[in-house]
Amino acid sequence: MHYAIETNSLVKIYSGKKVIDEVSMHIPEGSIYGFVGENGSGKTTIMRLLMGLANPTKGTYSLFGVDRKDNKIYTIRKNVSAIVETPSIVTSMTAYQNLEYACHYFGIKNYKEVIPSLLEQVGLADVGKKKAGNFSLGMRQRLGIALLLLNKPRLILLDEPMNGLDPTGVAELRDIIINLNKQGITFLISSHILSELEKVATHWGFISHGKIIKELSNEDLGLECKKSTDLAYHDLDKLEEALKDIGIKELLRSPNHIRIFDDILPIDILTKLSKKGIEIKTIRTNDVNVEEYYLSLVGGARHV
Image 1 (cartoon, rainbow, N blue to C red):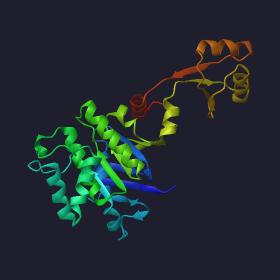
Image 2: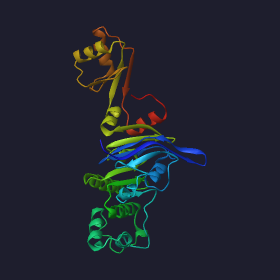
Image 3: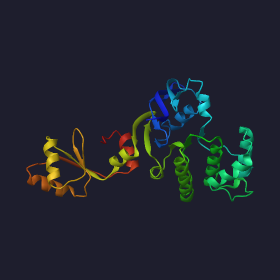
Image 4: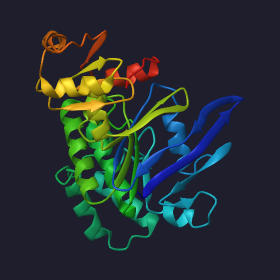
């Protein structure tokens, strides 16, 4: 697997405090990586390190396979864009003027062709001469995305992009992210709005107090959050055979228990197994969302 971002035992210390603690992350090319953690968990610091706005105290990272100490990293960063905290826009200018100003800065000569296309892409083609200072928060975020696209990025980092947006703004931003990802752009997105992040993320990283506590694909997260029943028994071979005999079709075996996903009441499972001479001592039902799953990780609860 090729990674757009890979960190190896990354550490950052500020004023004697370890803000980032041995962080190792793996963000596949072409993915939308949902980055979840409480305030102060280190998400923004990691983004700043990846953008070269600060240097790690220890450890390293690579972008598209290029190590941060390799001179080629400067070439790679030309195709990396980020909004860390808030979009950098000039509020006294229109959306077009903001993009025109940025084009002059980047030396983009064909800006008269580029700008209308970008405005159309982010849904700002009809704002006319309205100043950015009068934009809604959602419109400002979309203008920020348009500015990010000027350098034709392969990777975009967004720090809490959905904060403060109304439902319409969230939906518009979500659609833009999905469409850009389909064009091959990798995203690293931090957000507290997990219900919305769940609609776009293909991979997840959960961080707490500067430590990565879990990384998994959306498919694996789906298994963790899918409604299920866990059964523990001293002879898992015998239990698995019995479950199949009573008609259980969807199950997943771990070293300590068997998880079943069939739509069947726990009492019915116990009754049918009892008739086969299997008396279950431990049974647990699972039906959690992403937020509950994260809280179980942070709280130290065993979630397997």
